[in-house]
Amino acid sequence: MSIPAFGDSLITYLIIAALLFGIGFYGLVHRRTLIGMLIAGELILAGASINFMAFNRFLAPDPTVGQVFTLFIMGIAAAEAAIALSIIIAVYRNYRTIDAEDVAELKG
Amino acid sequence: MVPLFSAEGLSSLVFIFIVITTVLGAVIATHSVRLIRAVTGLAICFIGVAGIYYYLHSPFVALMEMLIYVGAVCVTIVFAVMLADPNPESETGKSSVFTGPLSFALGILFFWGLSALAGKTAWIQPSSRINDGSLEEVGRSLLTNYSMAFELISVVLLVAIIGALVLARGGRTRTGGES
Image: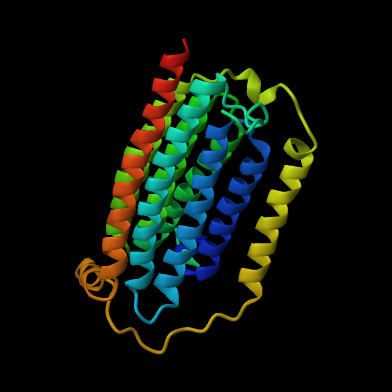
């Protein structure tokens, strides 16, 4: 019995990253609540990070660049999640809903 | 192809399991009606992504993924779900053309396009590596080449935390003043 060595080829990781990006984009359009959209956005960021790490492992002459960039993506994603969740809580206090279509007036 | 009952074969089997975990977690995160299950699916997906980072020879980034995403971001989203208390009917109530087949077609289109692009491109292998990409090298480049970005991202995190506090607190005082 033999099994293909998937973990040693660049194309495997690129397809996984594309799959995560596609699922995240689908969720971003499909979801109705703001928290659901935030979760889908985190999936898109994870796909981008996997792309960076795959290129870093197989193609980069300096194999620290992708790791440093992925760490920066993590920091930005943490800041983005904190800001977005506080905005969602403020929206919920004013509108009593987090449905993206009910939050449609500009004056709060 | 490697034989199944060897170290490489077992590691390839574990890799397939990790990929299935990642994709299943992502599908749960986008498809479950209740938001708390979506957050759980997101945590499962991020555990799988950490395993993928481990297979990309970066155990430090895998640990950071577990620590920051599973430990911090998912717990923060759980807090927001608890405070905002969304009802599950709002996910399924009204439906428009965007939330139905069009979103599915858009996701398939992006996946197919990116995969075809990755498969068609002739990637150029590097002729030589200037270091081995270990944790020591990552720390050295963080404090030499990328020190400006490293300092800036700590400022960004500080401003984000203070801004989150101000935003969440401003809504509370306004509601208290009205009621």
